[in-house]
Length: 328
Image (cartoon, rainbow, N blue to C red):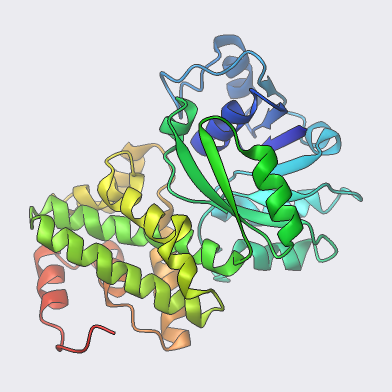
């Protein structure tokens, strides 16, 4: 299959490298100079240093050429760049199936990726979300990984899951697009909270409680928006949540760890050098939860720390001293 991967960040590069072993893959990025360097050095020094890229992977700065040649398009840009990317795709009269791997809500509109696709590519029905517990660095290094591919078209989901799976990358088909998207977005917010918890050295008990109650928040909002409960028990829900709340490769967890040390948010984000989607997502999710009447105390507290200067110790006290209620 001829694949066009749009976005040469860590995740786009890692997936492109993984698929290049059994597909013809062209990787597009906005920075032609960075693509030239990757072609020459066979490594993405900015986003995946130390992870050699296969010789078969192609690098192409020509957006139109990549799109027109592809039998499948994979959108791997940050969620904030999804709208202009879709607008550019809309200029092409005949598009192949497309997948998106970005996780989050669009800033301002609070729309999920499938809603943006319905708005900007209304005639395009063959699409889906690819999500699940996965650090780009480990995928690029060939570590075993399992993902979920969700589409309203079940046949398409099964076909693409089979085609994109490999020796070390196993993909499961699913039909709950909303649930998969919500799980992928909200786990980043919970990862910030877990980083704060561990940064304050509150112990394993506290982290286990936080992950469990975070999953409850994710599920409440996801079901309210139309997702299925069981989706949040799977790879794109609980699986991704465990990974990003406990793994130190998580950028969002790093944000929480550094907040707990008293670092300024702007300094943290500039030093990370990568997009931490949970920071933007937290604000959008808190507003959406308020509109939908869904109680999300962890998300709300993370927002107060990120944007209102609430000290970490006070944030923990606020969560622990909420009214006692039934678990379910």
